[in-house]
Image 1 (spheres, one colour):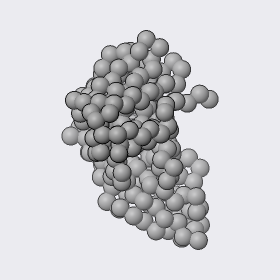
Image 2 (cartoon, helix red, strand yellow):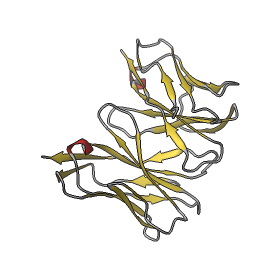
Image 3 (tube, rainbow over the protein chains, first blue to last red):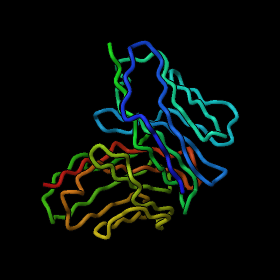
Image 4 (spheres, rainbow over the protein chains, first blue to last red):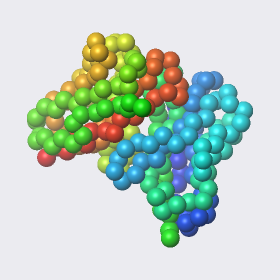
Length: 116
Length: 113
């Protein structure tokens, strides 16, 4: 069964430092996508970064990079040079065809607190 | 660029009332997904439509129904509302065959009192 596991309910990081948010996944599909979303207190779901299962290089988007280790089924998000505005809930998510259609499965989320 | 539009953004209803949430996908997107996010929880998939036909179904209560119309907009109808239906409801849209191209709307926050 498809599953996303985020084991860190909350994380603290000092402003300007890097932080890693953990994510492991489980799927029997060979073709899938892994995503990270940021959800600030306002509620919208902001797409951050995507990694395809066949991509050989780790995805990067500005200060965000995804540490993809396929054999270990992990897709950790690394945020470099943290900013106060990075304080939010972060969801790791996966999309595969599953039972039909490309629905998104989310992890439980990690709440990140950036300290000044 | 045009994004997914959801209306209303906020809705307050009383128990046992009905509610209708609307979703307007990005132009030329033919697939719509609905998700429910309860307080402090991760979003849960409810139902999806592709080319106006239901394509997948998740944990959607029998009190809820949804459809996709000829212009590809979708409506989620919720009847006999319960306090536990209070949540943020997201709609997402994509083209039919996109693992990565799924865009979320801003959400509708439903409060049942």
